[in-house]
Structures are given as structure tokens and as C-alpha cells.
Amino acid sequence: MNVTLKKMLAVLGVLMLVGGIAACEDKGPAEKAGENIDDSMEEAGDSIEEMGDDIQDSAKD
Image (cartoon, rainbow, N blue to C red; front, side, top):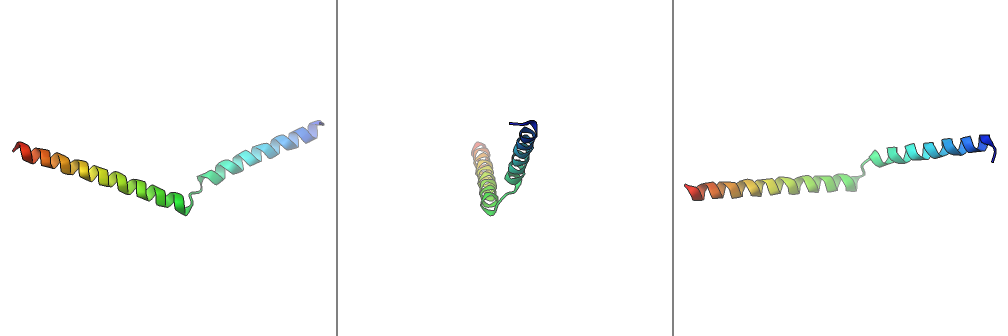
């Protein structure tokens, strides 16, 4: 292969890599919904933990 073809292939590879990384940053509706579910479950877990702490505090009194 000549030098020009190698350079063109290298540039094309870099552009594909950059394009692929940029495309991964865009969140689709399914990923957003999944994140919302994760956040909701984490908040529910925190609420249950706080409720358990309140019950333990009440039992000590």
C-alpha cells in the first residue's frame, strides 16, 4: 500500500472511532426509562431503610 492510502485509512479509522463514541453518548428512550426505574428503586430502598431505622428507634423508646 502506498503512503496516501495508509493515511486515508488511518483518518477513516479515527473518524469511525470518534463517531462511535459520540453516538454512545446519546441516550435513547429505553435507556432514559431504565435510568428512571433505577432512580425510583434506589429512592424506594432509601425510604424503606429510613422506615426501618424509625421502627428500631421507636422500639428502643
